[in-house]
Image (cartoon, rainbow over all chains, first blue to last red; front, top):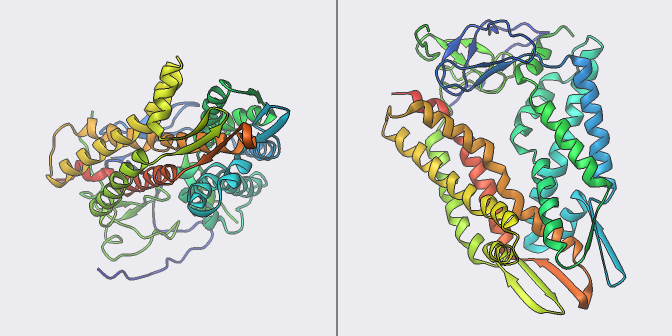
Length: 216
Length: 203
C-alpha cells in the first residue's frame, strides 16, 4: 500500500485536530474529558486503561524535578555504585563503567543495550524535558518543540534505570559471599534518580503535547 | 453508564503518538497528524505480523540464552562456566532463596509469561474472538509493564564481571548466553510494542 506523504501545514498551534475529545489508545473508545481534581486519574470505561491524569505537577515543579534528575544522573555516573576489595586490590564500577567493561567482540551488543537503556536514553529524556520545560516556564514554546516531543515519545519505553538499581542489589548479594562489598554514593544517587524519573514518567504525555499548542 | 462509542465507528481517528483526535478520512488518505506529523492509522499497519515475527525471534533466542553459559568465573576454587539457571540453583543451595526467586522471576517467569501472553493475544485476535476482552486488555498492559525487568540478568553479569577482576585470585567474564538473553529482552519488547491493543476489541 503506497502512502501519500502529505505534510500538514503547521504554524503556531493551529491544526485541524481536536483535544476536546479523548480516545482510549488501548480500545478506541471515545470519551469526553472531565475536569480532574489534583491527583485524580481517569480510567477508560471500556478497557480500564489509564486515560488521563491531572497535570499533577505544574511546569516549574516538573522543571525542578528534571534538573534534579540531571544532577543525580551525573552523580550516579561519576561516582562508584559498587566497590569491592579483595587481597588488597580494590575495584569499583557504575552504570557507564560496567557497560564499557562489557564491550568488545560479541559482548558489544549487550554493552550497547545497557549503555543506551541505562544511561543515554534517560540522559536524552532529561535533557529534552529541560529544554521543553525551561521555555514553557518562560511562557514560550521551545524551538524544535515537535521534534523534541517526538523524541520523548520514542524513548519512553526504553528507559531502564530502575532495573539497574535492582541489578546492583542482586550483584551486591551475590558478591558478598566471597568479598567485602561497599555500596558507593552512586547507589544513593541511583535510588533517588529512579524515584524522580518515576514521578516524571507519571506526567501525562498529553500535557507535554499541549506545549506544542502554546503560542511561540 | 452510557453506551460505548468506538472512534473508528464515529468518524474519528486517534494519533497514537500525541493523542490528538482527527476527523475521519484523514487516516484513509494516509495523511499525517496535524500536530505531531506522524502518519495517522486506524490500526497500526501489519501489527499482528510484526508482533508474531518479533515473538518468534524472541522464543528462538531464548533457547541459546538458557543453554549457553552466561558467565565464566575463575579463581582459587577453579574455573567454571555457568548458565543463568545455574546461577539460580547456586543461590538456592547457598540458602539465598529470595535472590534465587528474584533471578528466576526476571529470567524465566517474565520471559515465559511474555511468550504465553503475546501468543494468546495474537491467537485470539487472529480468530476474532470476543472472549474476556477486558482481561486480555489488562494482560496486554501487564506485558508492557513487566517487559524490561528481564534485563536484570544482563545487569548482574555486567556488574559482576566489571568488579571481579583480581587476576589469579578471581575473575568473572561475560559469556555468549548473555548476548542472546539481551536479544530476548529487546525482541519481546519490540513484539509488545508492535501489538495494537485496539485489535482485541475489533470484530
